[in-house]
Length: 213
Image (cartoon, rainbow, N blue to C red; front, top):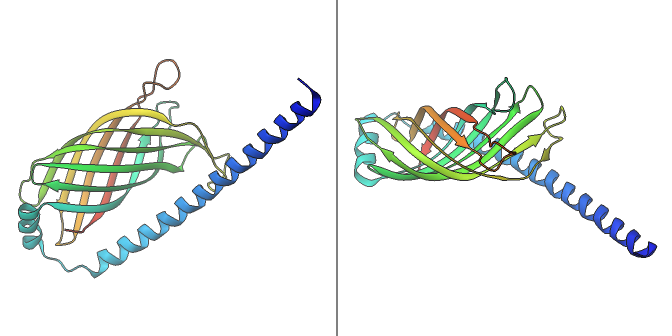
């Protein structure tokens, strides 16, 4: 290969690397801004919603329920002995016994080894309403990736996505006409394509959700 061609290839790869790095930095900053907006919005909604437990139960049973929530998450990443922590954003719709839910688990706020995880999952769930209590089980499909932080939260590198599947369950409580409490949610994942033997992390979440209906 001629020297000029090698130089052109080198310049092209360097330019592409710089572009990808700028895109990744922009996505990271956008995620942080979105997290702050969601937290502020949920706080305002929680403060402004009146307490109406009986109405919450009857409305949810009659029409189905749509909720959008945020929670604190602890995870076992299955690659070192210490856990990691962060936030989970979730949204779902239930029609009495059956529903759908999508989650983003971002366990990148507390990372003893500066290596977090981010997963995007969704799937069906089965709910068994008992008064204001809603125990459920669910299955998920999605993607996961490692987030290398290099000691600073705003200095991150997103590693390649891996396909995953999993299962879990938990308990939602209808606290008011507009607010649901996620008392517990457990999700165990399988990353079959990771390395030679796969990966089996799990996450546990406690949160609060605003009911759109």
